[in-house]
Length: 320
Ligand code: VTB
Image 1 (cartoon, rainbow, N blue to C red):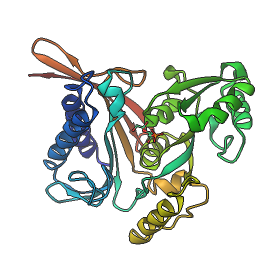
Image 2: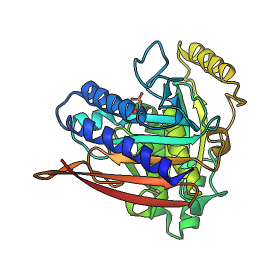
Image 3: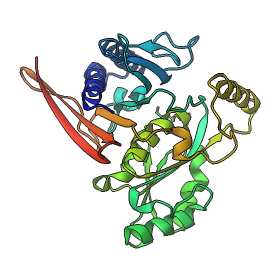
Image 4: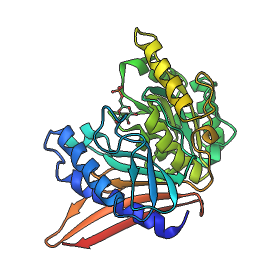
């Protein structure tokens, strides 16, 4: 992916972070999300490219902006776009850590049009490649991570979304002798954090949104980390309906995936040219939040680029 293009998209993430940070702590998650979405769309439309939303705010009939299939930009190179304009709307509304604006880009056809259903996820850093697997038990994966990172199981830190549905998983992790770092929301952060030692998170497990799974996978794939998923349609009355919508989505976009099988990084992101960008809205372990000075505003971002297999931290200090 061309560096100029990456820098343009970084600017889009920064604009959205600045717009939503206006709402930090004000208790209005919808307004915060709206601000991020509007800013993102406006900024994407300034770019000379043929952008297409693959993962966005929802399907066309439910989202007025950044809906799945929406075309963005002034024309040019064909690029797939996955966005979560404000990942962690509740976190922003409550001014809690790790609210991010997130974007993944890849050549056209590379990103999976993921259905809006849960996905069971496993994420880990590059050292754990080939040693962890979503079909292994939490205890087996924790042992593998401990071996790969050359530390005792008691120092392995597993990030999990704090949800009723994860009670057994959390109990299993603790029974295996590892630590749990629960998060209220925002599992793109949880998954990506496994590739960055300074976050203290070694493994991510549990079920969250499928769209967020594709975003996190793009970042982990770019730097040689591990991501595996499996759709989780649930077992309630809506399970059949969710499955049917997923089948329709897969057929509509001529994607070849097994809805019940393991989703590999190559299923979710079919390119080695993808790139993931997150800008901080509230401060967290990944990046700082938006900061204000007298006549300046500072926004911090992280960029996972497959071309360089590197993670760049970017602080942009803009004069108002
Ligand atoms: C998940 C997770 C997201 O919201 O979608 C979650 O992937 C919603 O989960 O990162 P519940 O339905 O259990 O509340 C986030 O945490 C934030 O968008």
